Structures are given as C-alpha cells and as structure tokens.
Length: 613
Ligand code: G6P
Image (cartoon, rainbow, N blue to C red; front, side):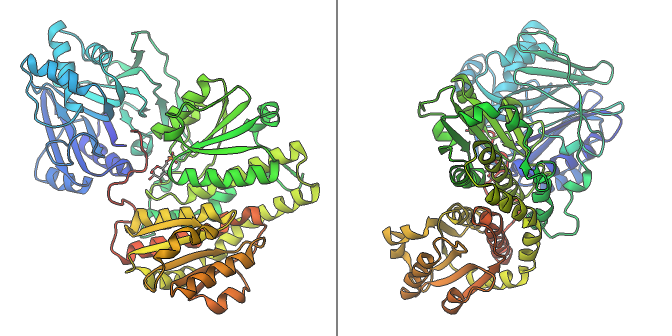
C-alpha cells in the first residue's frame, strides 16, 4: 500500500509526479504529498485526502523544479492528516523522503534519536527513518546513497523509499525491501515508482529493483545499483509490453465498470496460446516444465488473500474434481504463522492480482524454505510474487485499477481451469470425450460473458430494489459457493452494506434466523447437480418472507415462478459455471454502490495492493 513516484529530468517534476500519483491512487488515498527541488530550494506540499486535494494546494503555489518525489498514502502509523502525510523531512530540512511499508523498530529508533535532540512532528514510522539518515549523513559527512545504506542496515521491516537531498540537487536515491520499486529509464530522464504505470507514457524501459537493493539515479551519472552489502548490482533492463490506453477509463464512468466489460477479452487473453481445442490439449509452459512434480504431488496448497482467495477455492473444486489431486486452500496470513506441515512433495500455488501482497509473499517464502515447489498465478508482470516463484502463469488481464477485483478474478479462474484440465489429461482422470467437451465449452465462455453483460439494465433495476437494505445474504452450492462469497465481498467492499456468503445448505445452521422481509437473499441456482436442493433453499427463504434474487440458467421455470427477481445466464458445463455466475454479481454490487453514491473505484479504507501485514 502507499504509492511513491520520483522524477528527475527536463520536464516539470510537479506535473509528472502528480499524474503518476493519480495512477497510483489504487494503492491508497488517505493523503498525498510532493517534495520538489528547485536549485537548492526544497519545497514540500502535503494534504489530507486524495491527490485532487494536493492539486488544489499546488495551484496556489509556484513550485517549479525538475526533480522531486511524491506519495499517496494508506495510513498505518498515525491518522491520515496533513502532518502525517509524506514526504517527511529531516530536522535540518535538507532531506525529504517518501516511504511505502512499515518500519517495525521505529519506536526504539525514535527514542534513541529523541535522546540525541531530534524533534519529531508526525506520528509516523517514516519520519524516524529520514531523521536516522540525517544523523548518519551528518556524523560521517557521507553521500546520500551511503547514508541511506547505513540507515537501512539499522531498520527492521518493509520499505520502498525515495529520498532527495537539497545539497545534491541532481540525485534521487531509492531502495526496496519487501515493497515494490521500479526504475524507469527515459531519454535524459529517470523515474522511480511503485509500479510502471506512472511513467508509461514517457518510457517502457524499466528495472525492477530486488530486495535489499539501493538505486541512485542522476542526470550526470546515470543509474547505479548497489545492495545493502555495498556490492555493485548490474541493472537488468526490461522493455514492458503495456499500452497507455489500458490505464484510461475509455468512456466508462468507472474503472470497475470498464474492467467488468473487458472480461470477454481478458478471459480470451488468459486462454490464448494455452487452450488448443483443435489439438485437444492445454499447453501451460510453467506447469509442463514441472510436469513430474505436479503428477507426483502429495497435495497442492493454494495461498491467497481477498478475492484471490475466492478464486483459490474454485481452484480446489476444479483440481480435485478434474485432476483428483488433493488441494488445500489457505489464507496466506494464517498459513505463514501457523507452522504448517510441508514437504518437497507438496506444491504451493500463490494467487495474486498485484503480485505484491505481503502475506502471500511471506507464505511463498515459507513454502520455498521447506522445499515445496512454488507456482504463481499473477497478473502484474515482473511483480515480486512472479519473480519469487519457481514457475507460474500470468493471467494477462492488463492493469486492474478499480480496487474491487473483477477481471483479475475471472482471469485467475480461467487459469485454474486450464491447469486442472492440463493435469487431468496428464493423469487420465477424466475421459477424453469430457476433456474435449470442456475445452470446446471453455472457448465459448467469452461469448457467453458478453450475453450476460447485455443484462446490465435489468441488473441495475434489481440494484435499485436492494440499495437501501442494510444486509444481504448470498447462497451457493458446489462451484457456486465460492462465487457466493465473492458476490458478498464485492457488495461489502464498494457499497458498505453488510453481506455474507454461505453454502446454501448451511443457511439452516444460523443465517436463517436473520431472514425476514428486509433481507434480500441472492441465490446461485445454476447447478444441475443440486438444482432441486437449491429450490428447497429458495422455498425456505420465501417461507420466512425474505426476498429472493436468483441467478438461474436461461429458460428456468421453477425458480422464476417463486423468486422476486431472476437474472438468467447461459447454460454451461458445471466446472465452468463460476466464470459466468460471478458476472451478474459484479454488476449488481457496482450498481448498488453507484446508487448509494459511493466511490466505486476507491472505496473507503481499502487499497488494491496490500504490502503490509
Ligand atoms: C486487497 C484488494 C483485493 C484483493 C486482495 C488480494 O484486499 O482490495 O481486491 O483481492 O487485496 O490482492 P492480490 O493482489 O494478492 O490478489
């Protein structure tokens, strides 16, 4: 969480950084700030609230300057006010620093610095770091890079930082440990940022810093990287294949809506080069490379957080159902701290849109240390999880900017389906005919998603019916149970209504007590295998005066006759159901949030990339 941007070059640093911060607002939007160097003049502007508030503040000041750093914050230490906003300055006003992460031993460091006469203005852990760098720099009359390196050797925790120095107006120093930082190399200019989106229109040449690396960028001297042991590190320059249009709303009111509508394309992109229906096979290069490990695996453990955890649950159903390999799904945050039993015969799959979620990363590190094979299902190219895993597959959904995940979810489920099919073929756990049927049907999924998107107006109408209800219950069975969880999460995240997802049959064991005329119950009723049982659940809700919104297959008569509202989706093979049944739930939560006047793309308190524990 938190986004950082740095710029040095011929352009207006203020303009480049502000635009960059707007692109990084998905990482947090509690406050924003910027430090600009103009000659040896250092000006810092910061403001509680979104980047738009900072822009208003800057409009009143003539800042100038071609070097600067900026920050958009998701608060950890200290409430989100102007004082706690980054950048933070050293006591001598010579240095300014922005930080993403947490300095865990800040209290000890702060007390020691206070005892030496340092005075702190904010409640943040970050301000301690800039004072520590100042102290080390002053004591040894050191260069900025050296002072940063020595200071970081005394710090525990996670960080991506960028620091500037009034006495060295041609350099920015950046460093990372467990929080992402990318250097962009332009034509006579350099960028530093939490990801590449802030500078994509200026350059696609990037260097992803590794943990414990410190980068110095300077117009006079170029890019130099050292590690915390002061060893030189040759920069590995990559060219990104990412288009600027992917970062714009392209006429949609919100990124979330755009991303929902992109799904026919993104599902197709996830299958491209992998689903070979004509050849009756699924090619997954990462999985094929480790085919023996997968075939002989004792079990597969999938670790993830949030929406990615829901796709992991669908992965469990798919892999066990089709490939007959035992699967366990774990919240990454629980897995990493509960001393799990792991061996070299286990495979740990991490699912992550951002590829930067701190708990998922730590779970993977634990799995690696125990010798398990690690596999990543990731969206962000070059992200930490993608680089840490032994093998993996990108979902190729393009940047997902709405905080509520939509196209990344269906991309993840598509990949898990392909993986389950690939393994099923290798292990001969399903018939060739069924394998072929599933492949052919998977090819039709993007078209079927398009058909569901045409129901948008009808779904908007239903959203109007539930927008003022304080609670909602989502029920599903089998493959639709994780979809019910995901539907409830979507509603909570962006409309701030309380919602719960439950296995439909579990309703009787508690939630049924909540049902009355004020409780909308969203029932996933597309399963063929348990259809009659779902009908009974619907009857139980109706008997208690709950209102039923049912997701049914086209042509359904039985539930249509009893439910308050139905949303029809095309029929498909049961293991592929989640790819369709989640779409109306995404649209439903989107419209409820819009009708309630909520900020759909930047819901309160949330951030898209959770780089703290
Ligand atoms: C945050 C986001 C969610 C996301 C979760 C896991 O909570 O708001 O949308 O599902 O993190 O993120 P990841 O990037 O690892 O999928």
